[in-house]
Image 1 (spheres, rainbow, N blue to C red):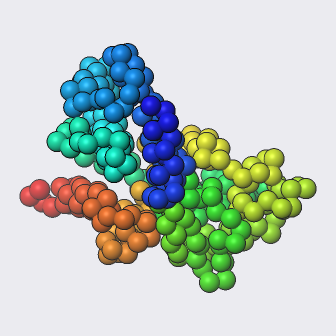
Image 2 (cartoon, one colour):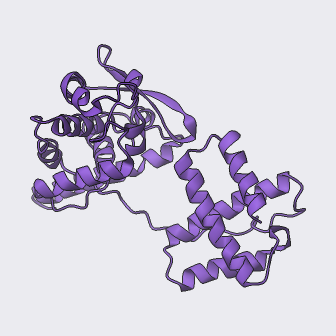
Amino acid sequence: MEKIINSFLHYLSVEKGLSNNTLTSYKLDLLQYIKYLRQQSINKLENTSKSNIIGYLMKLQKTGRAPATISRRLAALKALYRFMLSEGLISEDPTVSLESPRLSQRLPHVLTFQEVELLLNQPQPDSPAGQRDKAMLELLYATGIRVSELVSLNLMDVNLDMGFIRCTGKGSKERIVPLGSVAAKHVEEYLSSGRVKLIKNNKKEKALFVNQHGRRLTRQGFWKIIKKYARKGGIGKTITPHTLRHSFATHLLENGADLRSVQEMLGHSDISTTQIYTHLTRSKLKEIYSQTHPRA
């Protein structure tokens, strides 16, 4: 069974261009499925039926898995069996009539502009790490890129003179995102001073943002950094690596940006993904209305 899984992952990598993070998620989910099948004395994916898959999904539900987790696991199985069908390994797709559980729409956590200002003002640019952190947070809020895209940026991806960055998103899709003057200023200060001290003798490092050892900063490293500054600033809201991305999109829409432009800057392939931010802006409008209208 692992052989088929590995072939499937290779297909997703080469043909679909999925990121390493996505491939890892697929692999972990499918290995959990294989583990369940073996517990049911099934040793070949070709021998599985619709009832086996339903049994697996029911087990996930009984063990308290969230609907979003079950939906993701089913999506991985659907993709796997479609691959097996196309490769002639099975004659019928057992997942074809299975539907994902209905998901409640969870609105992302967003900071107010004042809270963003508070967060961005926490790093003190009087040390190499402080200059780096200030540049990272400013760049993240200025562009709305994902944290995975932030830590993947190389020196050649940033054009401060023209005011843009080039990043590679999901599915290896490249996009150009404008960079504001404030963020550009802090990135330039970091490049001319902080980064030089952080890389030390590692002159060949291509990464824009590096850690204390002069190597590329990781997602986990950034996660620790943003949590530290949220605590330091006394921000009580839940902060995740995506909080500034969500805030970026919401603040743009609140100030009149059109949905298509925000979609392009965020790198969403489907505009319905971007539309969740319109729910946030509507909620904000309702809040303002209820607070200010005399008959609200």
